[in-house]
Image 1 (spheres, rainbow, N blue to C red):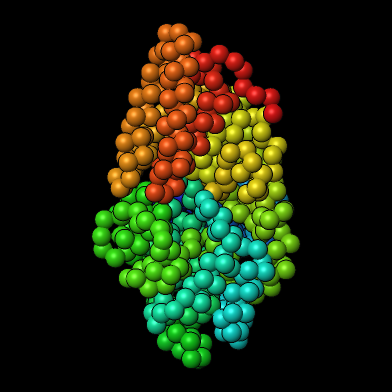
Image 2 (cartoon, rainbow, N blue to C red; image 1 turned 180 degrees about the horizontal axis):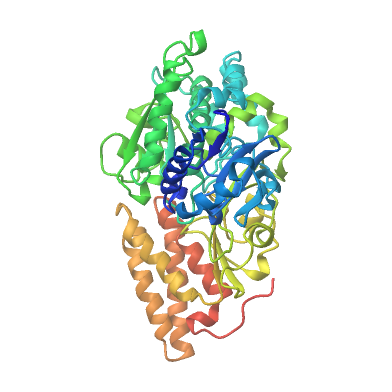
Length: 522
């Protein structure tokens, strides 16, 4: 057997959680026992999490996929021609032809699952550093204009135009400027940041370096949640290798440009996903939300102009510079340009990551990609946009997933988390959990969030226990008033968005609260 034969077993922490390391060890041991020489590549996950651990074998026809593979499956797989890509009960044929993957538009995730995450040779062979090479030839204003023309918007809750934020930092006065990547991915049901950092770390490094060139910053920080130890290890190794190869640090690629990058760990506070509390944490203080103004773009980290973007925003940048603004802008619909990695979880047969252009519907994601309900029962509600996102009922599943369409529903797309619930869910319990979650995670700085969320649990409990319609009406009015206070009086989006799940659950599932009436039909 040729020593060039490559076999891929993901080193992604999602795959590791279901035994990928044990599969890799058994594969190496069994091949050694048989005198077979293979090159084992620990790639990132393809995002087909219901098939993990997914083993891929490189063949003349392409990469053949097998999964989910258990360690005890290895001897039989080898006996039946695994290394030749032969069919097997665990086989799925060519990986790229698996319908879940074949229908995607992978721009940001083009390399994830395909390359060796820490191989600079692999990264460059698949288009890596083409965007940075282009950026090194452009003046800062032109880099910013390219991002603006592409229509890229922040891949978090606010969806703020990235080019405007970049230009604000670029034109701000200050000798020192910083680029900070918010990698505190704390939303339930989200894992795209982790997948990219573990599966294609140089993409984030390249995006941050381009951002540094654009705004005039020489120092960047990745604020990473401490719950991502595998991502930290991969990022640290990638930063070291990129610096040694001249793509990071002093005199990037032999030019006069410099950009340094460090990883900083957060302590696990959900509120530190908010940019100003994250900056407080980066400076070594407790993660409390800052009042605005001043904006971080003008006075952020250590009082200097600071560009804050999340992982998905920065990871989209290299492709935009490499292929041009028009290439990226032509994906999507309306004012929602490009693609978003939607992360499917909850009561679905096929949980995983689906990168699609804006405009796909929730029904398409749930059925064509998610495979429908895991239990076989009807899907009743889907929470889109994290633990403070609205609950979308079945009659709204056909609304296009774009920022404006969802804002019109009183919902948001946020970071692209999609958590499905079948008809066994109690939506009153879910609404109460929104208040409970916010009360637990509040930094405590503002009264609506600190006190209002606890009062919200109490009001919901009284509403559900109300013995008469009059008592229900009293508690319902009080709850609406409290939601208004949270939405308009909170310092940040943690308290401000808590009404989203509460109000959507009340509007679409009143019977779960003991209230009369049927949910609206449209």
